[in-house]
Amino acid sequence: MRSHKILLIVAVIILSLVTSPIIASGISVPNVRSFRTNQHNILTKRVLRAHTTSNANDEERLIPSLDKIFEGGSKVINYVTLKHWLWANKPVDKALDTLKLNTGVEKALLNPNLKTLDKYVNMFNEKHPKQQISLAGVLISRYGDEALTKAIIKALETENSKNIAIKLQKQQMEGWLNSQLSIGNVLDKPKLNTGVENAILHPNLKILDNYVSMFRKKNPEQHVSLTGTLASRYGDEPLAMALLTARHTDNSNMFLKRLQAGQLADWGYSRKPVNEVFALLKIKDDDIRALISPKLVTLNKYIVLSDIISRERTDLFTALRTGFGPDNFAILLSRAMDDPDTAATALKYQWIQFKRWIARDYDLMTVLNVVFNKDKLAAASARERSVIDTYKPMYYEANGLDQVNTNVAPRV
Image (cartoon, rainbow, N blue to C red):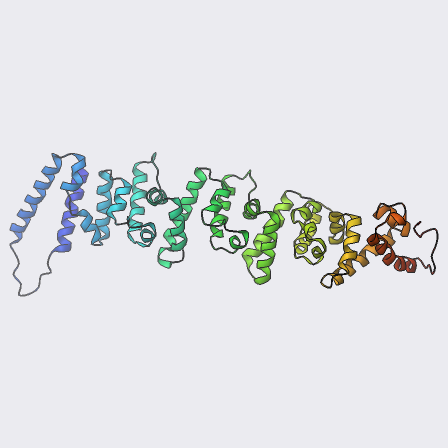
């Protein structure tokens, strides 16, 4: 109480110095002794009145002008005002009102008085170490979490409010972590739930990215990632396609490159076999157009990564043949030859297929038996017979056969 009285006296003295008229020649000056006597009487009355009133009335009776003094802009008075509030245990939300930060959260973040409220929050935390609060928490209590998120995003675009917005965002995320808010729930907050194509290009994705980083630091035993979160919400195949499309439009975007690498890394971390990634990408659903699908770019990149991580010796052709099945893939290549869009690519794959059959010493009968699982040519479909007929001249040439060899020709 004693120190508080001294503080009040200092405040009034400073006020008198700030508001005293400038003495100029030709202007009469009032009697100094009389002025001091009056000031002393005023202070004595105020201090006596303060001594006989309750704490609840201190703020109103002792220094009714302190808030107005604060608005005048003096840094010393600001500190005096905050110390007075702290002494009087003024609630932080009441301070928010006094500082005129109660006209909307977006306006509050652009108001310079927010920095003063931040100082008061820090002083409050020093006085009450067991009742820690945050500036973000105060604003959330008043305006709500979602409203603050939107305001922070907007404030980050303004240079004058960028620093305080960064601080608020960090505090908000720490609050999410402390309340064990899942990464999936955070995805909904900055409006990243309107489709994967929009999400990967949305500037708010960096909010989720920052939260994922904080979550990993706090929970190092859990493997979480930004791409894993997006894949959980939208699926691996839509995410991969969205990234491929976006990178085709803007191949220099480093963030998109990082996302694409992140998806591959997630699969590698889980040591997914190549055939499982083939299934995740739903390549089989594309039928003959799978041969020219951009998904194969992603699959091929994972094949390279898988070879490093798991020593899974494979290649794109083998992955496709395994994914579709040897018989279905042979038929798919034959059908793709009939489509102008896929014919050239199908021809290349079919040539690889035939070369591998020859390397394995597959004669025509072996192709019928092993590849198509048929005992007789009569049991084969028209497309299967077409594949064998296409393979025949290449096989004969490779083995130096000029005419039909009854030992290798399929039985009718």
